[in-house]
Amino acid sequence: MSISDKKIMEVANVCYANVAGQFAMFCNSKYRGSNFSWSKFATMMEEQSGTWMMIHGVRGHKEDINKQAAQFAREIAQRLVTRAEF
Image 1: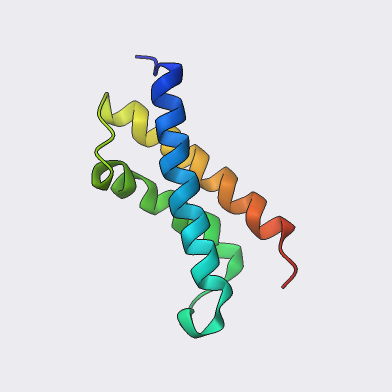
Image 2 (image 1 turned 135 degrees about the vertical axis):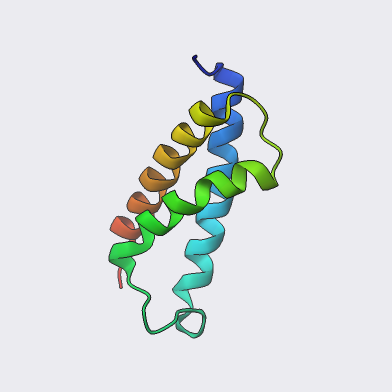
């Protein structure tokens, strides 16, 4: 099953909003625990992406949407971490 362009944009917007919010929060060291590592950030975002789809009410074929969300979340997170100067 394929996802429409409109649905892909919806998934992308939810991912951008959530990954950017998490990135901004973790830039402040008081919100990072001792186990936090920027090298694990993309995986952490990818793992949370399915939950965001549910919370934001993204409807459609769950497996396809979650797969696309995981891809977007990882790509966005990797791009943000790569561009940051820590």
